[in-house]
Amino acid sequence: MKDFISVLEENKTILNEGIVPSMDLSSTKFKKEMEEEVIDPFVLQESYIVGDIKDLEEIIKFGKYTLYGSDSFNNKILNKLIENSRTMNMFGDEIKNAFNVSKDCYFTVFNKSKMGYILSKLKNKVIDFFTYLPEHHILGFYIPDENKLFIVLNNSSSVLSNVDDEKITEIIIHELSHKFAKERVNENKRINLNLMKAFYKEFLSNISVEAYLKVLETSLEKNPNLSYSDDTPNEMLKFIKYDSGVSKAIDDLTDSLIRLEGNVSTSEQMWKRKLRRIIGEWNKVLDSMESSFDKNKSKFGMTSNEIKDMFRDYARRYCIIPLEMYLFQSTDKLVDYILYTEYGRSMYFSFIKTYSDGIPRELNYMKPNKKKLTSLFIQELFVPSEIVAISNEIYVNNRTKEIKDMLKHF
Image 1 (cartoon, rainbow, N blue to C red):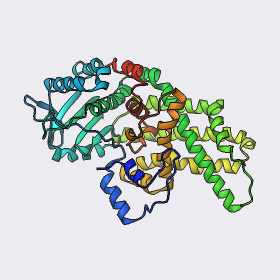
Image 2 (image 1 turned 90 degrees about the horizontal axis):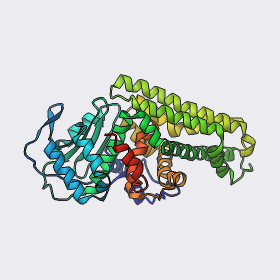
Image 3 (image 1 turned 180 degrees about the horizontal axis):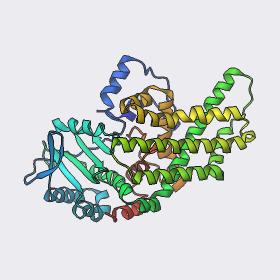
Image 4 (image 1 turned 30 degrees about the horizontal axis):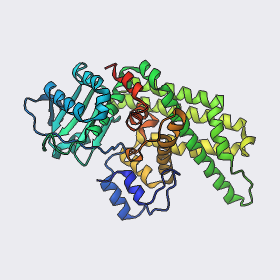
């Protein structure tokens, strides 16, 4: 099964420039292909297969099915990972503690043919923290209400066959990043605040420039002789980086999202209440940016009405509308928005540019391997630990100190 980026790359998408060339997204053939290949908006591709294990006990029930595991099974898998995974060698003691000391992290086995049942149960929850490996039916997930983390492995093949130990270690670190954000709000802020601020500042820079280009396009349609500066997007990027009002708004947004995630719940009523608050926080940061831009409109050669359009119309389509769709509709509708609308695709590529260009520039990271960027991004808008989780995967060599600092708390 191909991931979403592979499909786009086959359509000659230019990731570096965030350009989506003309694709017939309305065609029945393309829609059917995407529906078959994109299972969920939070998909990562990894590979790990485990064989039949004796002495397993019941760990958790999912409706009519039960997941099985044990301390000895945890140790068997962990020792195997330490033998073969360079990443696990870096963090082996800390990860072993998370599984064997805290007693709330588990490797479990399950029949691969029934894996979709568990996935359907997870997808019915309002908040999702899971990583699904569709090719090999491997699933990692974290349940905030129970504060438990599970790595579900296929029990139908040899434990030594077709193993990618690096990838399973990445899944563990990814899910532990969510668990850490829930358990240790203040420590999460201390360790990861600069990363999250850098991400949101870069993402807001990307969508502001996209919004400006949309306003300019509309203005040129009305007045083809309109004069404008090719350097305005660069001026906007510098303004967002250095303006004190914009910086404070982004700082306040980041702080609020960290705090709200620390109290996250899979209770539908409570989570929807929190998501409404999160939408309010995003509206506040856009209002603040609109105000700061308006005070400096002469610098950008724009009118107040054009700046209002930028932030109340176009920027809203890149961040507020996806959140409202997630709250009031379904993940399927959200996937359609990302795949089949111009604004959804622009939002998606703004996330890719932020991970691959923005964070390295702000934090002196080496650029990541783009093949690892295989998620349909949206969680970052309401769960800042997703920024940390993905960064811990794609920048593991740059973030060794931060990852160790996080893991030592388990």
